[in-house]
Image (cartoon, rainbow over all chains, first blue to last red; front, side):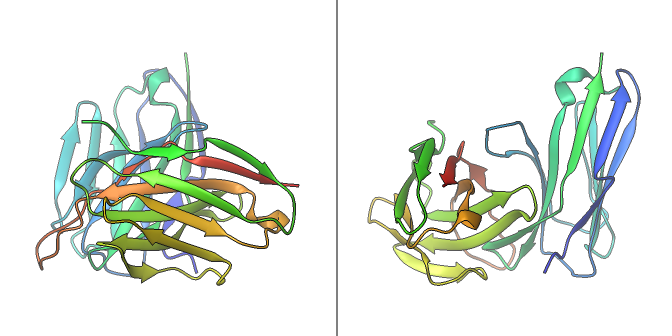
Length: 110
Length: 117
């Protein structure tokens, strides 16, 4: 059973554009993580959000955790080709088990 | 600090065989989780080990098993391989501490690409 839905599934944009990726669930998570994965490699942790309503910024990336801790968003400003990859959200069920989202495949064209 | 290492990186097996994959976590991390990643199902949780004990388990058949050693290294075994077991198997390492307000951040290895023919 897939508990975390990400949208959009695929996104192809030009360099310099802005974009937002959404991660939605009907379940409450104790924390939520965002990862980026490149082909043939494991996911790389970008950020962990813990508190409802929390906003974290990582250079051009802004992450928000919903007030009810059921959803999250990732906003990228002025996307660059280096941002290309598969973006995954993962919600923690308890402390030790994570449910991953369906993924958003982003391609940024130069 | 060295990252998570997984061996082998690539593996080709035939149906009916068994396979063992290995994962060495980040030094000091006591929790190791295993995931299966396929294009159709995405990333799915297999199980998690902490201090040599399986602490969490996903919804996979008993053909998938694992263990953890006293040095926190972990192995995953798949018996009687099926074509559908072809996937990228990922290992994630985390400190594994407990506590109501504590959250564990996971750090992934590069994965083992298993192909079943």
